[in-house]
Image 1 (tube, rainbow, N blue to C red):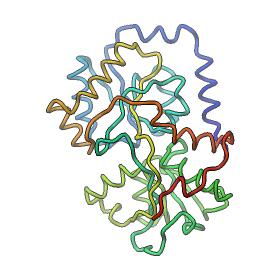
Image 2: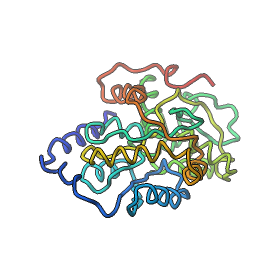
Image 3: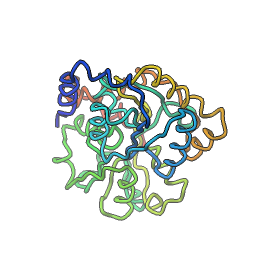
Length: 295
């Protein structure tokens, strides 16, 4: 199942007119910040008010239904910044710029969880999910698609050959809901989202259990479009990195269950880049034991 997203997106980026980047220099009356399914949505008012207070201009939070939509909006100058996933960042790194890295438990890492119904206590690894109806998140989600599909590749399988059926929810919490409600036998989800839902005693999350956790990958980052004025990019980065040092920022971090925002490093996404190369056929398959940790 080779991905065609990278070629399509990069081709689109290369076809942009030379003057497109000049638009970033014009003063803007609104800063448009995109959120996708990785974001805890009841934190949106806090995010907007924090950014507005610090940037000194109105902020519009733009909800995107998929990572593909978010990337297209960044590439076409419809948004200044967005909180996306590591997989779309790797695909689109030629036209987006890393801005800030959420620090979960103070670290820039998270894991992909395979989950199933809480009463399936005999299930302990990916192989045991053969024949399930499986819930994916988004075709450009690292935790919600890339990780398990590359693991299946190592087993000589595809989702079509391994699962009885599968579908996309286009929202990580919806993966949990689907498994909790029995619409799917199992699914794959961002560990951060599952842990937050579990701590909040979410009814659907309580009906699920973790089968196995992946190795650590770079936490979904906040990026800006590459054509954004560097001064504005730096201001946004400083505002986010400084969040832990002021009361309004700490309220936002607390709502998001984050310790801080960190200054990102490209090498934090090397693990995801390796998975993308396997899926694109430019790297040999990675053993399942190097993708998922022992149960």
